[in-house]
Length: 427
Image (cartoon, rainbow, N blue to C red; front, side, top):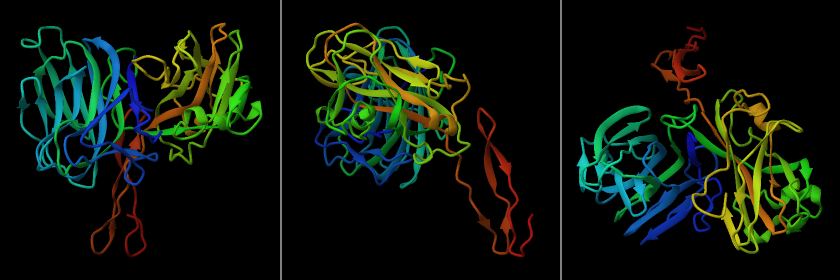
């Protein structure tokens, strides 16, 4: 699988359970922020006045495995007491914790043993985004005897390497304020979880900015003939599935046609407008869907991705929509993206901003069923790597050369550019 899950909170909904399998809040409610965020348009804000406030997402049914995690952290106000902000574990059991201390430092914690692991990091600054990554290598064994490797990274630098009680079957994460945290005010963005399968994204997720591209026009196919809400006409099916926060029954496309070829395809909104630069490396594209039915009878679809009109098509595995209502990605947990493509299926080369502008996303009836299949929203999640911002340095008499980062194809490397002095020459 490699990349198990990516979330930038771009659907801008917590209460509707749009981008994760479950939310669980006690004494406080995580909220969407559109004022403080990284790329894209939103982040998750956690500012409980008491108790806990977090999101939870399930990835597996419980598998002993190694997983690598990423989230970006912005601290607006420190907790009054040390607070776990990210947990790795299984249902009701999260031994691997990242803990935010009252001085702004982070420390690994074994929550099963109720003890901190190793030394704390240097305090983080308020009002600044940090890339936080963790590597948890779960092992098989009893909960009392088994120990797992647990590593913490800040902005790509290893800051702690410890041993932790094993999970004995990883299945989910929690993020937010995982215990009482009066005065805490933090923002989380651009979460990602990798495993070690496949050949891409099998280590730490690394730097990444998450945006969504929505359906923006008629694509190669417009076959779903039943519609509620939106602009009339089959060719306008994109108007019913393009809203940023899915509105479910308010506007959707549906089909009861038997057969396996009823398809909708759509062009997508501008990657330039979404903030992707012309030379920004693109890590992956995932196709997300908000789907449902009118009963729990067997019904299924596949999601689709192509690099250009009439191009080579990648489709997901059969996806159940057998839910009397609405769910994200599929009817039952774990609810993960059905398609994650690291390269353009048309060319088998890396995605670029240009190829993203030409791609199409969609869905198809893949089994000959007469059950109602409905789609309320469709989107392409794109993760890209934005270059570090360049800084100008004035010495008091001249502008001095400043470092910039150059993408080599696998990493950002430091280079040098010429800069103009106060006398008007270049040095």
